[in-house]
Image 1: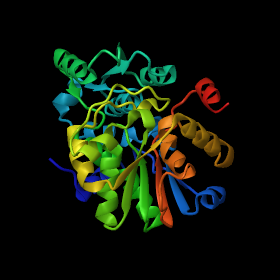
Image 2: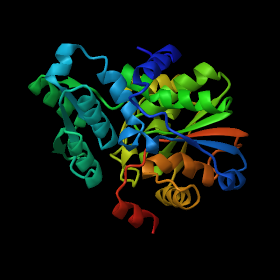
Image 3: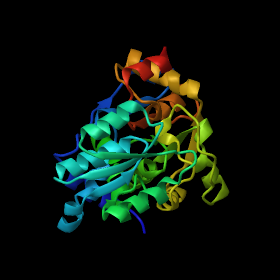
Image 4: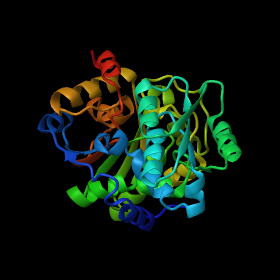
Length: 317
């Protein structure tokens, strides 16, 4: 099973007019600090506040009328939960979402606000895939996983497709890595359009499962990460995403929680935009000098901005 540039382009046509075509920000201060021309794709301004709506809607919109009528299930730490909930509402059906007990309250409330039912579990002792699959089977629902699905991956890749369509040639694309769906789709789009581009993933130091896996040449499992970047708290890459990323991703770099905080603060103070910790990791990598040598024209995908005011103030204060 694979995902191609044609799949991403087809997804772009399917989500057009439903998902936002998010803006690309520039900052002269950022360019001067890092020594490159940086183009920041703001998926924090996407519907539900994250790129996840792209993949969720692309996948959900392809279900049969019978599947739509029965409803959709998903498991997620937050952003995919909201994305599936909204996609279900757009399609006139229902969604049941499995979420960790310690998910930020703002993400739970947003998921409920889109009309979904939320079921919780302990992320440190429970297997969300097994629990989610059992929940979907018990209720007769179609499960849309957060990244292990070709239509989800193709949908996520539309963010990179739009970025390159808008700004032209890029030398490098820097993307957050959790389960690997965003970078797999983004790399598929980017390398399909610009074969010479470097695709660089960014993980939190405590959640380096993809970096370890790519270095080992096989999927490596780590303890469930404890990091402020809750959207990147994956313990093992997906099978499909890893198979794509092995072929397409050039490097993975790591950032500390303190560096993520610094990037969130910079984005707020100098770029006037709010990034959640996971969304800020590519910016953190640039500001901390993790990518060397840094090419001349760099694209960055900010994956999301779903963080409540209190938590944001705690992290950057």
